[in-house]
Image (cartoon, rainbow, N blue to C red; front, side):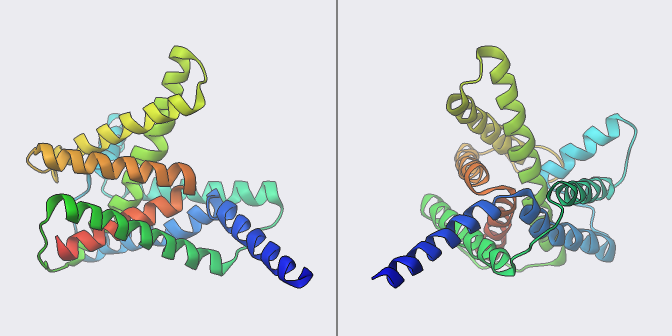
Length: 241
């Protein structure tokens, strides 16, 4: 009986450790870096000029300070991730990486992606097989990283700070409002810029709901898993919708 309890406790501890570590900045950096590098390679190899809404927004912001270029956003994020990695190493003294955690993060993200996809399929009821190209793969990779960085990390944090200034640090209320506002902006940005769609209320609502779900994934499971859930969802959509 003691052996069974010990095994159960070890399993529970392992799950708790995975739940905490997979949400950390270190594992987010590890799983997201290959996506940025893959996107950059495709941009260079196929001379791709189309960008997603978040990349478009970031390039506009960089242009305001006099920095222009298709690769400036990716390079800036790569540098930021490298700094975060060094900062983590400096504080922790060592880095312990569990490969199984990375695999489990990808599996978990895939599950979230399929759940979101079947929800969208139920709402829109429109499925047909499409081809996939290098340009589409590049957009899938970039949208997962940049849209999560802008609309989840930056916007949720930003809106929350603004709400804190207005009526104090009511954590749950302010985070809830921040998620709603960031999801609304996320939806809106899919209808502007060079890759924007013609406005449609149903599509806007679906994108808002997806943004809301991805926000919850980001809050509870971290940046890395949110990025992969977003990317896998986009990949499934490109193949089937």
